[in-house]
Length: 288
Image (tube, helix red, strand yellow):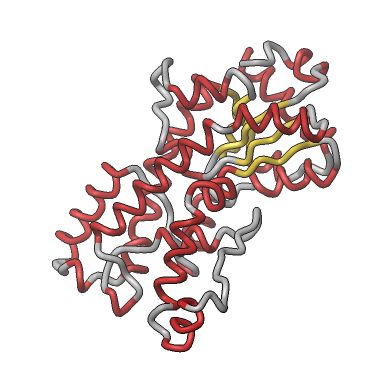
């Protein structure tokens, strides 16, 4: 860890952390709080993916759909309209919409092969965005004078690293410059996330081996063909399994590369001083 003790963390003139864990447990909320309090640069991995690395894919997908509408086709071909993604830190819908869900095309589903192609695009983009983090730390300080830096990682970070490999390229690069902090949820949090997802299932990135296995199991369990699969039904069925798949990977990241804090403690933060206290306690707990 770049802060050997809680005292070193408290005394550091430049506090640099990466928050990771399941989507919905407060990574973006805490990052936004720190940014708005002043003195902290907020680097969002998902935003970087959706703008720098997958922005063209997303825009082209919008244009592909627009070209099916005669009026929009005419306007696009004459350069009379401009179509782009309006992705923000708080609204990542353009990215998730592009990722899509596999299944029946009349229900908005993608062929599984195309779905996996987009998943692979996301994997490469996420790794690149994570490896950009050290450069953004330097950029934030050199351009804007920010010594404090929070990296708001995506829920799928654990899918693109090997937390048990001490030579993992991504984790080595990150841990040399930031303190990695796992926001750990409870079983109650997991149940609430599953309920929330059931109400509004959204596309996500998953490890390819996990997805291939889940897809084959779902086809076998339902007896349906690829073209008969309800995309929402499949991702609902997959989600709880994905959370169970990710939990030990998050735990290994915290055990081998950083610290962990309770989601309830993060939810109770009022300001940057509270954040400093919670991280200090996590470091003490790690060293005890």
